[in-house]
Image (cartoon, rainbow, N blue to C red):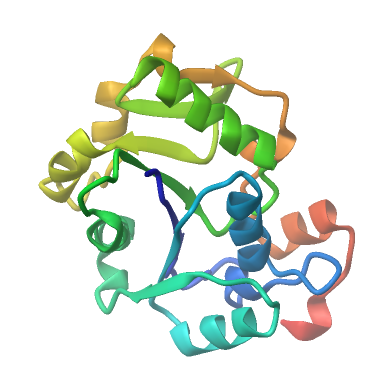
Length: 203
């Protein structure tokens, strides 16, 4: 089994409101779009790690009709690593081979990219599998279960990046033609440009 973890616990300081709740289209939010994408790619279990404004995030998600498991990270201000560890602890059980990890501010990944990442892992069993395009690398990142404890022991100031970089390989890099896999939406201007709407009245 390969579950997915969505990291959505941060303060979204540059956006000014929870990115998880930002509308996209047809009643979808950033978070509901990501969750549905994972399910469309046949991922059987999606865990969302929340922290700041957790109640607002869960409430907004509940009206979209999507479904996911929520895990609270009360230590979200200590950094993203704490949320990742909460997510890993929530999915780590017998039968889990690896976990897909993505950020809530990367909402437009295609289901085909998720499937490509999972397929590459099943072919190669590379410890880290990620979508790439040239020198750019995107989301979701697949982490083999053998690295879970290494991530749990990681330096909080460095986060999981050093672990991921130490285990990347040509076998685990999947070339994809998917702008959404590399599109990180952090600011109001980026949101308006990408989503094609002026939502400033709601900020």
